Length: 206
Image (cartoon, rainbow, N blue to C red):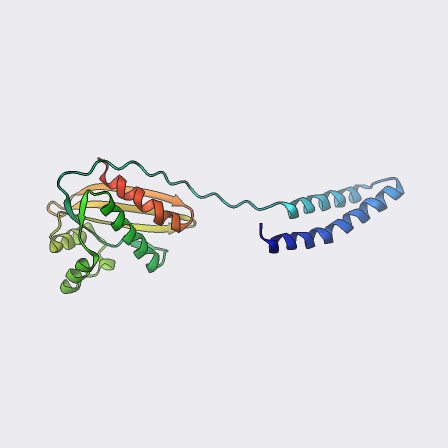
């Protein structure tokens, strides 16, 4: 607990204790404690108890990361487009997208198309990732990039919960090969550090 909080608690207790002692002393000198006097004393005690209670920090959800399977002999060429964010900032969305891209590379199951090359192709075709919301659009981007698979998804924040969904799409057939959903309640930095790795590994587990 910080010094500032302790100081504030001390001031509140100093104000409450004299009132409580005065009520108790007055009541005891008369030899009787009336109903309303008793209720006031009871209320004062409860107030002091509430003041000195130390607020507990809410525990965040623990993120369990599965074990990654052994990498294949031949790696697939894939591209990872930015996640579509809702109710979170563009900077946070980009950071989480970059982290997912890095974690997919770290699984050693794919050859990841560099972000710069992805941007160059999209700019040449006059396309934007932010406007690509359908699977057909994602497949079109994948075909333009010349990759076998493409990864896209969304991340939404409702209250204190982040709901992330990622999918792998086969660019030849246009079919979704795998979808992973993950709901997480806690600080976004934990989602960045562990949540994206969890999603990346679950995308490659058959």
